[in-house]
Amino acid sequence: MNLFTGTRRRGGTAAWKGSRSVLRALAAAATVAALAVSVTSATATAAPAAIPPGLSCDTGKHAIDEYTGFALCRNNGSQTQTFWVHLVCGWAPDVDGNHVTLRPGESGQSTAHCGKIGTGIGEIHVRP
Image (tube, rainbow, N blue to C red):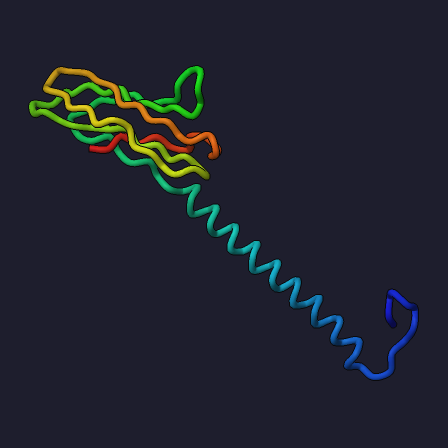
């Protein structure tokens, strides 16, 4: 029976054609949902990068601007080290902060700013 007109069609193929399109739509929706779940779970389980050896660092977002991130580090090692902050910015491109070189015992800060088009800072990493 045609649900729009209330009439019956003769023969099974005409009614089956409508069911095929519904089944195709359901299969496509299930495929998209399965891909969305797998992509989401893969990004949710990504572990942040470790802080380079010899540095002790505090990272965070700026108190007033959630699009600005920082890494404040101290060189506890015996050799000069260079580091910078790396921000994962959601929809906007990821950004790197200024490179900071520290002699043993020195402290310094690297900052970076995500673009306003994005969703803000998702992750903060310290790179050697």
